[in-house]
Amino acid sequence: MRKFPVFPLFLTLILAACGGSDRCEAPKQPAKLAAKDLTLVQKADALGVPPSRVPADGALPEYEDYVTRINDSAEAEYCVENEAFKARAMKDEMATVARAVAATCKVSREEPVLATVLKYRNCASGHD
Image 1: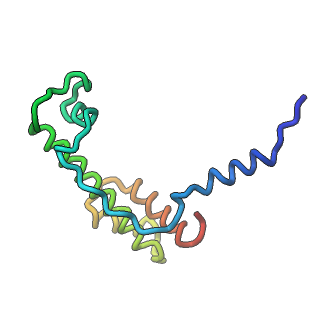
Image 2 (image 1 turned 90 degrees about the vertical axis):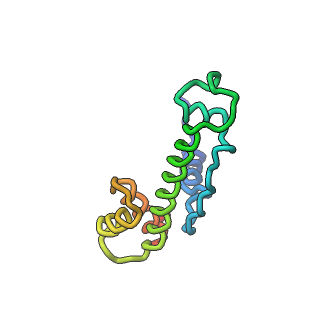
């Protein structure tokens, strides 16, 4: 039986756990998407058709609706990230902070908000 080297595996797991995105930094404001900047795949998603069936003509009302939904979603996500970042050092219970962040950002599901609060709280306490 061949022995598997444990050290390289251990080192790989340690390095995988410490990614470059694990820094405790304020979230960046998302860039607004515009209908004129949509890719072919995004246009297909907006129309609900395969990319090969996207019409070649200009902006359609469906594109504007799609862009509005994407921008609203990105803004809500940024709000949750930003509020959780600002609340990272609060000593209140996490569920209370998560409810406050969800109410501030007008988000209905608290589970992802709770996960974000936990992420920034762990980051602030040095448990990346």
